[in-house]
Length: 254
Ligand SMILES: C[S@@+](CC[C@H](N)C(=O)[O-])C[C@H]1O[C@@H](n2cnc3c(N)ncnc32)[C@H](O)[C@@H]1O
Image 1: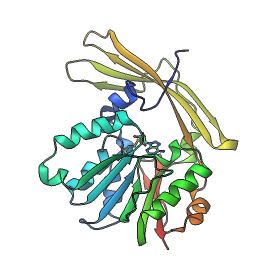
Image 2: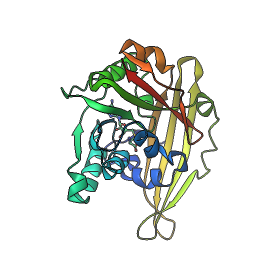
Image 3: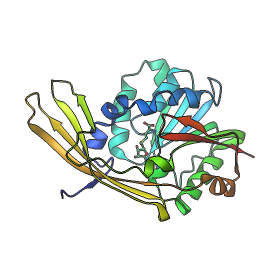
Image 4: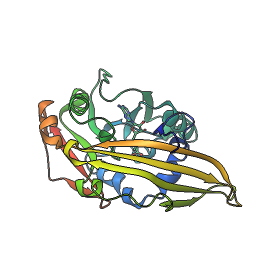
């Protein structure tokens, strides 16, 4: 099998085509509305794992002041390019920084902390989750909310499709196409860990392969409630279902 790069690696195709893939992913529809429903426009928001700014910029367009942090330079580079193209009035409400959500300390607080699209599941459940909840608590005003979008266990359990199957086929500017295949999918329920290798294949208008990159993504799953509580974050409401594959867990800083 092809050697797999880590997800969102520099020169990897998961970062290069992140916006193409998420724009086509109906399972994310409505997530920005969920986060916007947790605090009024004008509120300050910290996004942990902001990626290329999909949620950051959508919230800034609605009037929120958003600080987005991410660990991956390839994702931040795309976010900076998108930021430069925003109207000045919207861009003025955005700050992007490189940072690790398990250790971040900006020495300020926000009205709302969000961690969309399974980002918490990218770090191992246990100490890294506990530290991320501590980061959220450290950056929240008393009474502020923290929202974490997490995958459902039943989705983790689903078997992978055959590797030759194209699971996503999207048009690219210039007439080419992006095809995705799942080369590997292994869920170890006992340890709450899903390993996937996704093959990104960029084709030209005639179908010839231009670039391809097999990339490994690991998701970790656990009950977030006790880990959040250890950081002083208490469950605020019932989980909010999102896209049939995940739910947003909302906690309040006591
Ligand atoms: C699935 S993307 C979500 C991006 C964006 N929030 C969205 O909803 O489109 C996950 C992001 O989390 C980032 N990430 C993973 N581990 C991180 C960490 N320890 N600290 C900060 N960012 C991290 C990745 O680099 C990636 O950009």
